[in-house]
Image (cartoon, rainbow, N blue to C red; front, side, top):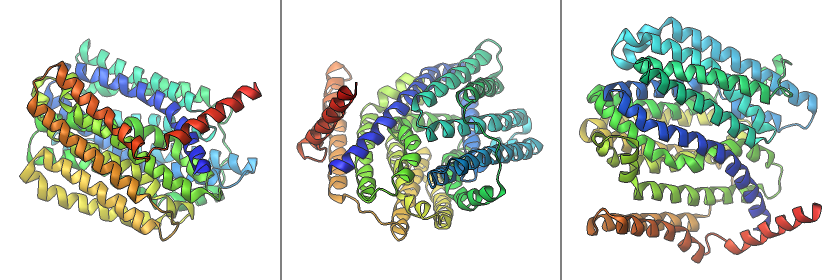
Length: 491
């Protein structure tokens, strides 16, 4: 247990450092979001939400699975020349693939605007997003370089500088120049250019132009089957809003977007983990204790994400009030489903690990294509009946199918067990505490006492996990004490 726990603590420490930067970025976003929702009309915010989802999807297509391929092949060999070829080749592929896709989008901007928003007037917005795609792709590649060299602090600094520039300039153009939706995306474009300048400087020692056709073939062979896998996940973030716009209106899309934003707060735990995970996972493959490490990673990832998800559910009404005007209150019905979906999303990188380890990623493509079909069918069935709640339920069920299918298929390629007892106990505990939260809301007035009761219920979750010995607090303390002692001796 101790050896696995040490690896888990190492992963956690990296995730925490990444998390500081990510938390700072999210803090900037959540602080500026109320300003944006009050400065732009509700239907304009709905347009911003749909275009954001479109950008998320096309961004998946630019890397064709290259991030995972880069991490896998970089860690596959310790030879410096081979590693430099991986860096130089993936760098060129990132840029040219993003450029090609951006040119296609610019050429068909009017048609894209019509399909997404039912109006060609927003073609300029689509063109700006296409340019943003190229800049942000290179920013993302720069963060991959930093992650390969274990520099989470630098990743955090870049993330903060970028988001402050993006959100600050977006607000400037919306408020003082009255540019509306266009101002929002122009601000993001200029902020991303500022971030690109910084990322080039941070990576000045590692940027390479050593292109290898052989390495390119290996990277693409590994990465191309991951396109459907990544695309289907991104499509989940677009299709729900697209179906809502088709069956309802942009006001509902805007309310749904706020509920989605609150439900996605669990990403405060999951996003830093996703940054730290690829390099950690592939560098741990040769460890004889690897399977136990992966098992414990899943267990503690579920514990952490369920805690944040429970917190989001507990204070969902308060969070919506902080982020938006009173007209957005209906977003509360979306929060629990989206929050649960994000917990499942956090498990996907680990559950899909098996085929990636043995470099046979084609099964992931088929599973993702099936998931996309399942998602569309669920949206067709549920949105007309349940409205935006139906969209949220569709997202949850789609992620549940994706994660379950990946685990069942993935274990055939690289099997590692799950700690089902700890997972079941932690999930059951979260559900029970969520029930008590609802009872508190029914029995007490909206005052300080209700807030205190909700907070106590939330804190009881980790307390019960420690009492049930699901969290081995004594082992964790001992390992941290030993590590502190070793550092002191070295000094």
